[in-house]
Image (cartoon, rainbow, N blue to C red; front, side):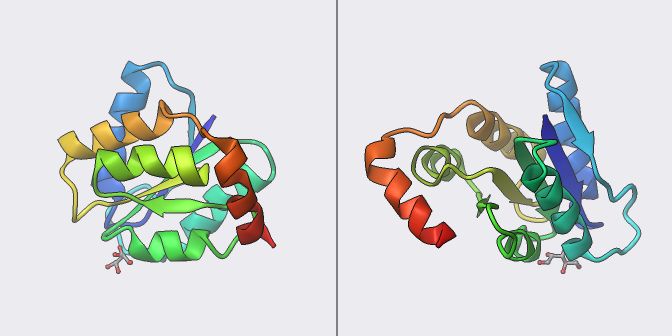
Length: 142
Ligand code: RB5
């Protein structure tokens, strides 16, 4: 189950991502916001982070205007590894190396076509070479 969250700066891009998830029959839970009316991005980072911490969702996608604020907020939460990605190389690498569980996107940075490809890459790339990378992830958690 994929947790979705955004602020007003990410609302429109979130709608595009919802279209992609529905077309691919990928289950998701949308934690808001629900319009382009101004809201505070940490609130939505927290809802998505909590859903992952509780085990209700295994991955999340967070979107604000730049993706920066919402990823900073999410990364304050234990066990949350949010990666702000603007290209598919980083989306692939952050899954393989960091076992990132949240993808952060900037609704005012990436267009919908690229964003959907980034989402697709993020969701379809497994954590790999654990023998090298797990220790580093454990160090982050410490
Ligand atoms: C909201 O205007 C904007 O600050 C927010 O979406 C985000 O870009 C923050 O990092």
